Length: 100
Ligand code: SF4
Ligand code: SF4
Image 1 (spheres, helix red, strand yellow):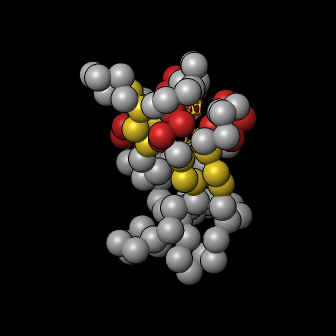
Image 2: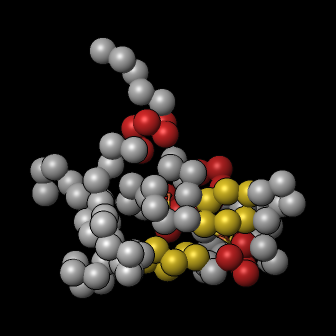
Image 3: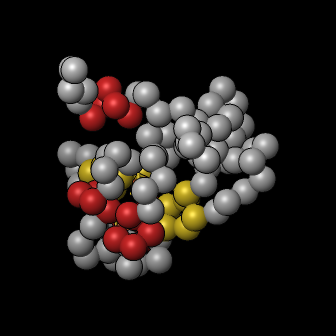
């Protein structure tokens, strides 16, 4: 069996409302906190899907598209920058699980 690299594996994740452009993300991040007072930027090296990244200028960015809902960032961020919501499934976005 061929071992897939992380980007290939993430490409196999299926999301609820994947085709909608007006979806409401289940995670929001106040990147102003990331880029001002956060002393460690823990989520940029603990998120397994690389949703939190640091660019060449040292600026933290967040993108929810590859999130696999592992929950790590909820605990890794002790700065109050990460908010989780479980919105109406009709407008929300999240991983479609195979077995519930
Ligand atoms: S730990 Fe929290 S405040 Fe710091 S970079 Fe990550 S999300 Fe932003
Ligand atoms: S829930 Fe997991 S995969 Fe999603 S952004 Fe947080 S750490 Fe990354």
